[in-house]
Image 1 (tube, rainbow, N blue to C red):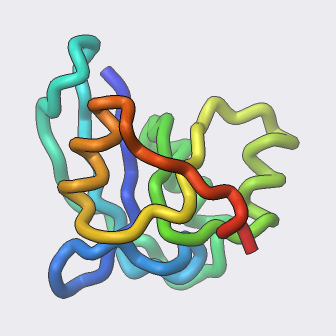
Image 2: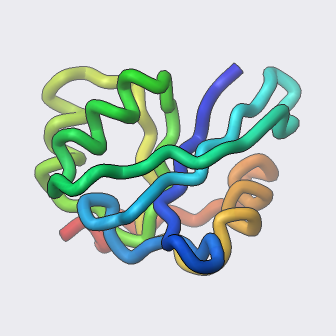
Length: 114
């Protein structure tokens, strides 16, 4: 099983513009056959990224999908050797993004790391 967290707003599950500022995450649990087993919401807290990243680690998240990611978060993932893949530059609905990810069609744009 793996967990995929997508930054979302509170209104309609649109992907939120920035990991460090998002109000919550939609977290999908996916089995070895790449099928969604369950999903739920994880509150994001009020910090600018550090506590959010710690929540990802504590909840065994292995993929983060967001429209934008701050370089501090990406650097911390690399520096600490965390096994978390980051997909930045993703827009639209969280449910559409997870479908594209599972199909191997999710485009990543690391230029949106800012």
